[in-house]
Length: 172
Image (cartoon, rainbow, N blue to C red):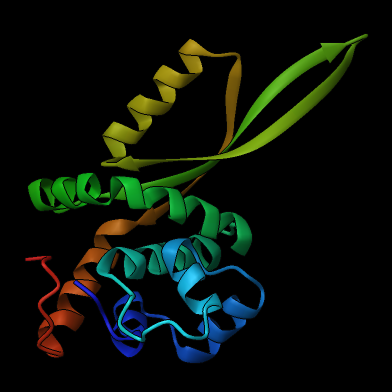
């Protein structure tokens, strides 16, 4: 469902000033980044998924200490999993995104070299921990730190805003 920009920002819980700053820094996640760059675009090209992406990116940056550019990239990837996350939320009332640094440790002449890459998993806490344990068992990578964002809280806020503003966003 296409959204007007004001609804997109309200669903995401992001004010216009922060959004303009993110636009200027090219840190708006996903499809909305391309819309914001195209000055001729219709105001009604934002979506529920892009509002979730923006909310997730803002939460990763403000609550999980992710760099805003990294947060935008992670939340952009989660557009592919939006319906899966929504299904988990509907089934359990609980869904999280876990952002972590995955490290490859290499010893070279007694020197430890650590290569870090940001990675994220989504699901319930139990599902995320199982995914990380499996990944650690299958690769030579280690998890050095974890940061969780409550995606369920984002969905609940989006539902509340939609109800208060009488928007049909399909998240019932």
